[in-house]
Length: 495
Image (cartoon, rainbow, N blue to C red):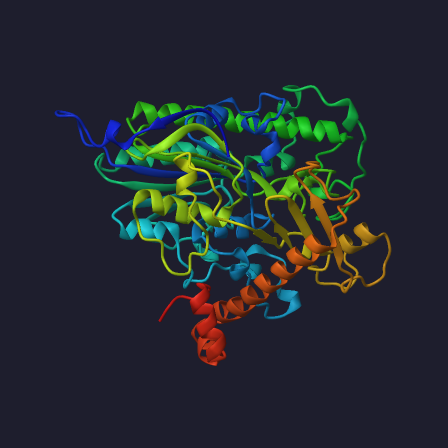
């Protein structure tokens, strides 16, 4: 763990209101930004001034520099954060291949999985969610534990004023202004600006930064929605655009999101909610600009898609160290148990993430040895430890057809590659490049170890998923020995 200016904030400094002060309830605020990759955040070492407000927030708390999403796509990433469990448990068992392909048909967070908002609600917190993507909604199982859920209306498309970071943060401020000041509260904000920017013809953000000469290549534009080595049609707004211009557009939009969050932070101070609120900002997953084979899109097991920023600024009254940057391995499934631990709320059985509360206090050590990831644009998994990222994948194999556009774009032919497995070991500390397209490390021992760990982990995830997604009948039909082992491991709730 590396610490810069470790200023210890003791609980005794702010244990409660002074005589005559109005009591203010404590808050837990989680802000999740889709497509936010770690290496484009200033506090993580980026060379552009994209995130001055997030950098300032990191200086008041803890920055987890080795944080990874367990899924490089929107629904499972948010499921992992809210449930503190592996998001593959939320992948539906298909009724048939033709039924797959939409978020609602592919994903549902099972009712039996634990929930961060449900635990906080039981602990006396008011709870609300403000979402910016139509699938982050109760219909996909995201409503559990939220007293108020402000998302997309089902009977009409939202207008521009209802979308984006400014709209989401304004809704949250309005909700906070309407609850009792002494009420403890939890709010979950989901921001989709960095995904939505590719569908807007407005290119005003392009001029904030100069394009990098080394990214001058102009990628081809594909007719397909998901593809390797080309700009997908939904991400193309006309004309030609280099990789550098894609990156500058992204960075300009990120700067705009950061500015809106800065205004939101000022609003929290204005209504007297800043000091007594634990504030968390995380990336749900990242985005690629060619390093991993995808352009202006996500879905691979490379660092550009899996490596995300996690910033935690605890509230007054919680012992914590300021301006700490820790390299402890962090998975997004760890966020829920960490927040419950610092709030003194019981972590439920089945929440399989681990708490990093000690890291917030500036204490050394790491509670996690391996972080896992699955999903996205390929079958297989990634297993990440303190040194390596091991990828065992089948590019394009999740598509319905034997020869899918994804498979064709990766392999360059029309053969059936669904049984082909790609094994790649990235020594990410010694070679921190974000992509997995170059030469990998050659270490048979580490490859075998991480392969065995990932294979065993997801074998048990699949057993639990089959039971959870089948409902009550799944439990009654399952082998009792398997059920008991799943309960012992925390993948199923205890009886």
